[in-house]
Each structure stands twice: as structure tokens, then as C-alpha cells.
Image (cartoon, rainbow, N blue to C red; front, side):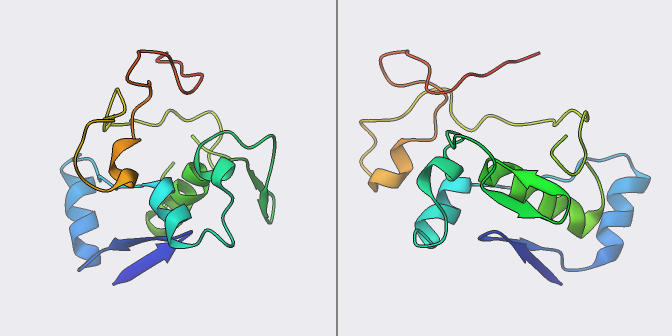
Length: 132
């Protein structure tokens, strides 16, 4: 079964696999890249929304308000499997794997592959981040 939302796709081949993860207390890992959502639909998705720099709420979905694409994509995933720390599940912690601490400005691939870090190459922070 394929479930999608906000420019990303989750592939779930058999729902019984989710039961296996739950029964064995294994995590479900989802790869959520807001920037790829943006570059896939730059007409409808604003860059600040993808980069966590939007000045406020840009998307409302019933009672949920989103100021960044990551939360919207994560809630789409949660809706698909009903779990939850975003507008849909406030107050819940999000266990996260950091893909890159620093931007990789010398990486030879496409420009879009160079900017996933929390910090610029000069060690200056790109975002206000709390690890608490």
C-alpha cells in the first residue's frame, strides 16, 4: 500500500509489517525531506515553509496549523500509521536521526545535496535548535 502526503511517499507493502514492529517494540523509520517536497513543487510550496523559516502558520488542515513542511509531512505519516510531537500530537517528543550536522559545500553532487546540515560550513547555526 502506498500512502502519500505533502510531496513524499511512504511505502508500506503489508500492514502486517507494522504489527510486527509494534509487537516487537521496533521503531518505524520514515525518511522525511521537506526540501525535496519543495523542489518537487516550488509553485505550491514556499521555500521558507520547507526551511523552517516561515514567519507563521502557512497551512491549516482542519484544526491543525503548520508553520513548516516537516511537521505537515510527519503528521501525514502519523495519520497513515496513527502515532505521534507536531500540531497533530502536541507535547510528544519526536525521536529524530540527524542526517547532517554541517552543510557539505564541497560535495560534488547536485546543489540540492549540499544543504542538509544544521550548521553552515563556517560552524554558524542555520536554525534555532534545542537538543532538550
